Image (cartoon, rainbow, N blue to C red):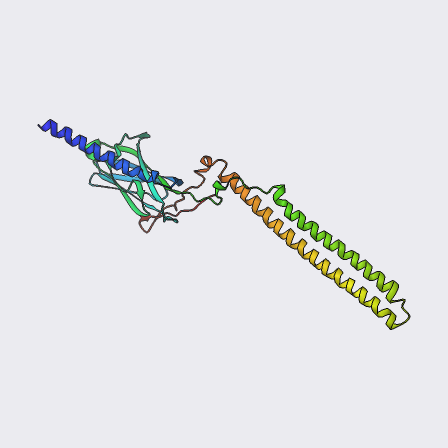
Length: 294
């Protein structure tokens, strides 16, 4: 009867572990979302441990892990930076090495506290239990590694679903036509200017009386005003056309650069960002900050 109870308890415990693992990875398959690792980092802390004497002396730490030994249990304290966007969460995967060899831990049985999936920012603690029962003698170098992954839906600066950006000759044609219209307007304006000057020089200035000169003046003046109107219009169209073309060209080049960087090989860029944690312990608690490198 006792043997059957032990078997049932073992099966029940394993079933609970399996359920925890399944619910832990469910966020990865959320409907309508493409979740991936946005940023990641590994925090490490090395210490000398003498479990029988209850001694733990830190040797080396890389950013924000604090260890302490209490009543045969090791407390691993750390902190997770603030998430800047909704819908993101942390995943923390711990591993422990002793004298350069990884300890074959059954994580769900050996570690309690803040690790695994779906963790929010803030101060966290993992408790390594049953050290004395499991090891009795544990004396030497111990290293704690925490792999910090930030999961979420990546928001790219360019929508890859739009496809590769284009600025073809056909799309450039309206700008070329506008430039042609501007040039034609300026050219026709020059013809009116030449006619105005000819009438003024050859007819107006050589007239023998005011009555004879007046019509020539009006004609020359009208052609001069037409010249100014066509020239100003042509220059205005040309300036606007050059400005709009430059903006469109700049936008195309920028979009093409972003497309080449983020869309051509998205898998190759999935680890393009890295979590950076501020070094040291601030105010007795681990301090961290999150920065992005693109």
